[in-house]
Length: 145
Image 1: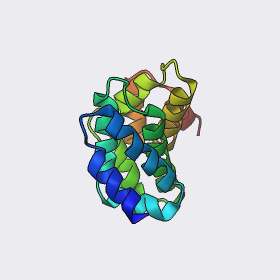
Image 2 (image 1 turned 45 degrees about the vertical axis):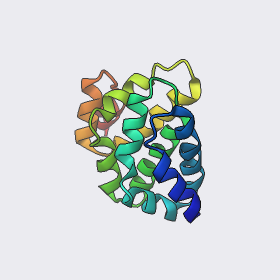
Image 3 (image 1 turned 120 degrees about the vertical axis):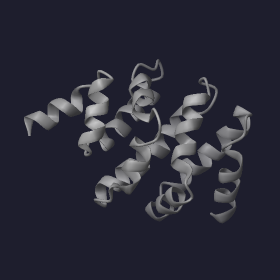
């Protein structure tokens, strides 16, 4: 576990998309265990994952990156710990980017983006941001409650 995490954290910031894909897949598999999610979040990788998604131009494994964010957002909701959600949703331009990914031609990418947004929707501030980006599902659900 330690080697995979070390490798992932050192290579995820690479300019070469081929070098970034493997660490994203490693992070994805590591995050299947809830205790690893905390370690990964504490290492400050959330903004890095979001930045990698935004700047990749589609050349990285978007599905793995979104799954990582989804694990973290989902975990924060289950634990009633908003720190993970704040880090994800608070990352610069994260919500507009996730909303844009809803239109992806890849159904897995679109579904993962929607899952992350749904998990972030427990925060009213993020629901407002989603609504500003014309993603109304969480807003409508919030009003209906």
